[in-house]
Amino acid sequence: MPLTPDSWTYKYFLKYVMNFFSEVNWDFLYRKKKLADPLLTAEEIVALKKVLDQDYYIICSVHYTHLSYWLISIAQKIKRGTWAKWGHVFMNYDYDKTDKPMFCEATGRIGVRVIGFEELMAGDGFVLLKPKNLDLDKFTSVIDAGLKKNIGKPYDDLFDMQNQTRLSCVELVLVVLEQIPGYKDFFKKFFTMQKTIKTITPDSYPDCGDFEELCSVRRKILWVPAKKNLSMLTK
Image 1 (tube, helix red, strand yellow):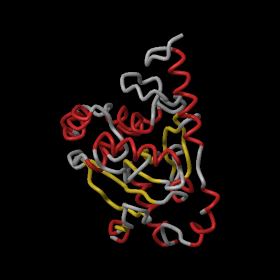
Image 2: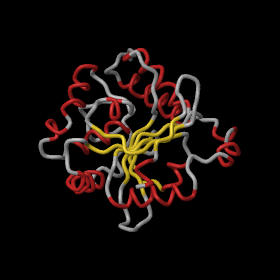
Image 3: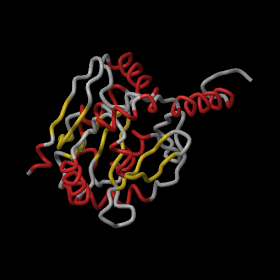
Image 4: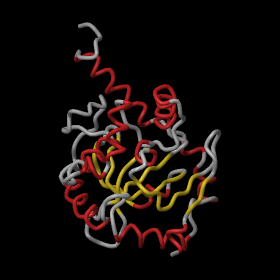
């Protein structure tokens, strides 16, 4: 069978490659360093948990020790001319209706799943985003239902934006946003960007202009400067 984009062999090959790349990391080399230099202080963590308990947000994160981030960054440089700041995107989700922060994400091999707060702290940075043109209470109520019905879906190794039975991380957030009545008006810049560049990456969410950055922290690496803006947590 020829190896064409529509062939079974091509899709199987791509699925195998993406699953392999999604697992490659060198976290163990920097585990002690990260423990000695945490992203947030104990007081900042308490404040962040209170914020996450109130409403839902889009969250972009990065793991510099994950091969997937570097592949995304290279692809974005080729496609858009900019290196990636973030390698993953997901949302906080009140899965068990307690005050314990939980998150909903889509990852290779596993698909759409719920994870705990420690996963957020294990990375090299994150940013919290809220919509500029939509009331946060309304946003939260719709997002809750949208995330719930997508849990358990397999990962979209082919990044097929038209197939919602399988979802990548950027697609999970996208399909949830599409559940909001009038979403194209609320997120006009985002969907214009998607139509123009014909693809989206985690950086598309903070870069499009439809979302406000509430707080962010990021370790320095190569072309990406260190950043820490936690003013929201001290209000």
